[in-house]
Image (cartoon, rainbow, N blue to C red; front, side, top):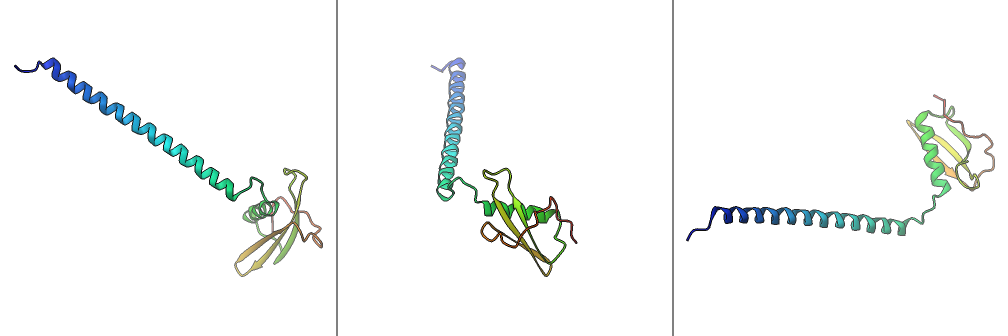
Length: 126
């Protein structure tokens, strides 16, 4: 006796539903794996970084941002950067040194003596 066409079509539907369900479960497993991996990377990064931003590094990044907008008017230039958006408004001394075709930038929270000029909004030298 031959199986009825109705039974064959039910097998096809059951197989199709099984495949779709398997794909959904694999997609969910991939999503969970990705979230766990991201969480573990964040936890690992927290081990390297204590969550506070070093004022010297922040000052250096702002000094580089100033340098992208223009260059100082002399080969050696120093200014004081007050970070008013940080707690306690820390002051960082930025120093720009011209060497050939490039500039070097250094930031210090220790050596503030001798630097009196505040940093401008932009560097307008040549």
